[in-house]
Image (cartoon, rainbow, N blue to C red):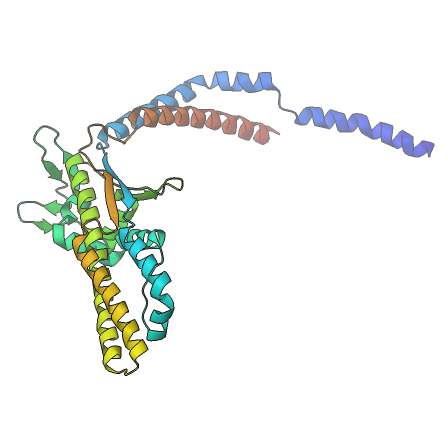
Length: 323
C-alpha cells in the first residue's frame, strides 16, 4: 500500500508539469496577435472594401404586401348545407363540402403556390422578363433596365448562356422556382387568421401589380372551381331525380338541387370568393433590402476574424515544426 502511494505521488508532479506545458499562455497569445496586427488590419480593410463594393452593387428590393381575411360567406353556406343535407347527399353520392373556411383558405394558398396557377399567371401577364432579367429600376422615370447578357429588349429574345438542360429562355419550372423562393411570400397569423400576401421586386410598381393580380386571379380560379363542382353536382342530382320514382327521394333531390343552385348563384355574385382585402397593396417608398450597413459590418468582422485566425495558425504551425 505504501509503495502504491509513493508511485502516485511521484506521478502527480509529472502530470501537473505536463498540463502546465499544455496550457495556453494568454500573454503570449496576445503578443502573437499584436505582432501580426498588420496582417489583421490588411485582411480587415480588404474585406471591408469588398463588402462595400458588394453592397453598393446590389439593387434595391421593394416589397408590396396586402392583408387579407378569409371570405367565409361561401364556407358558412356550405357548412349549413352539409349539416342539413350531408347525410342525404352522401346517400345520393355527392359531396357538399362544408370543410370550413380554414380548409378553403388553405386550399387557395396551395393553389396560389402551384405550378399550374403560376403557368397561367405567367402567360396572362407576360411577367417572365420582369421576373428573370430585370436588373435596375429608375425611380424617376419608372423604367426597368434588363440585363443585356440575359434578355435583348429590342429583339425581345433571350440570349443568356446556360448549360443543358436549361435553355436560353427560362422554362416555366425555373421561373416558378424563382417566383416561389425569391418573390412570393404567404404568411398566416395564427392568432387572427389574417393572411398576408407579399411580393418583392426591384420595382415597387411591379411588386404592387403582382400582389393585386395574384389576389384577383386566385379568387377567380377558386370561384370557377366551385362553380364547376356545383354544376357537376346539379347535373348528377338531375340524373338521379329522373331515375327514381320514390316520392321521398324526389323531395330530397329537389331540396339538394335548390341548395346547390343557391350556392352557384352565390359564387357568381361574390367577387371576393376566398379572400377579402383588408389592407390593399401600395407602392412601397422604402426598400426592404439589401441592408448595406449590415453587409459592411459583417464583412469587416469577417476580415478581422480571418486575420486573427491566420496569425494563430501560422504561430502554432511554426511551434509544431520547431518541436
